[in-house]
Figure 1 (cartoon, rainbow, N blue to C red):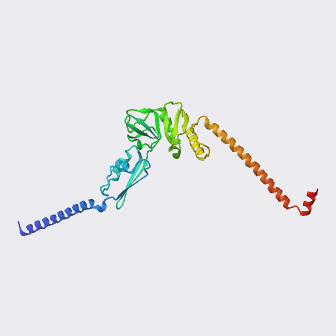
Figure 2: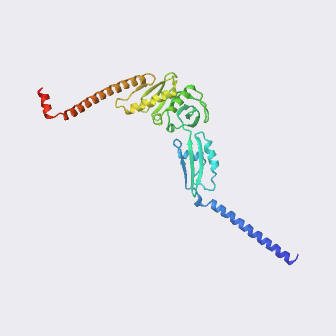
Figure 3: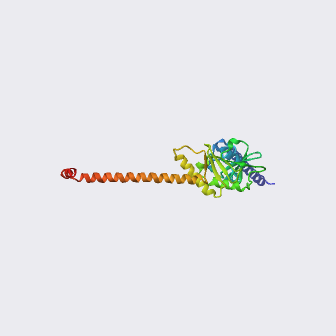
Amino acid sequence: MTKKQVKSKRLIAAKNLKRGLIGLFAILAIIFIINSPILKIGYVKVTGNSYLPREDVLQIARITEPINIFSVQTDVIQNYLQNDLRIDTAKVWRDFPNCLNIEIVERLPLAVMNCSYGYVDLDKNSVIIDTYKDPKKIQKPVIVGVSLDDVYTGDKVENEVVNKVLSYLGYLKPEVLQQIIQINIADANTIEAYTLKGTKIILGNIEDPEDLANKTNEFFYDVNLSTKPKFDRFDLNTLYDDAVRKDEQLYNSASNVLKNQQIYQDYQQKTAELESTITPEESKKIHIG
């Protein structure tokens, strides 16, 4: 081997060593960057959750704070969230340098039912979207009179009466739904709802859920505006029509009074205008005559 060949091999070895060192430093730099505390996500921002607590959303997303911004796979987290029955849609994205955004649209429960191991939340389609044992977690009206046995998250409750009740609850205004605490379906022909103030509302067999919900919304509106004593019992199928007729009679009576008052005021005004146009001499003639 000549000196030239030896020198050439040494140069190649030196270049390879240099490249190896550069590659090693690059790897170490990447490891340092990935594990740098500067790149730890300082806050995970969760929006769109009104029913699910923030902690539950993070648990579903399998996130433990703090996490590194480069180790976050937003598409994986998004799939975790959307695979949960309590979440309809989810969107996950980064806000550099140190924030992760999670935006969800919840599949909200409408009612709660008892089951063999605790409670289940039902959505508008009678699908069980959550199960739990702690009664403190109950946030919606409890359907009583029927108990569920072996049911699991994702199951659909096949009960015609329950379906009617959920449809009825779905048509209620949010502020009215908050006032309902229990619905008794023990008698399918005389379903009863109970409010926070202890009022019992007779719903009957809920033939027309939307119409019944509209009457319920109107009932709560009238009760909130009324200065009369509150009802202890109210039958939406019979008493509501009577109450409407009475209200219409009172309204018509009051309208007639107002109309008579207006006529009298118009008469006084015209009389005053007429008197203002009469001269003193004409006035005396009128009084003497």
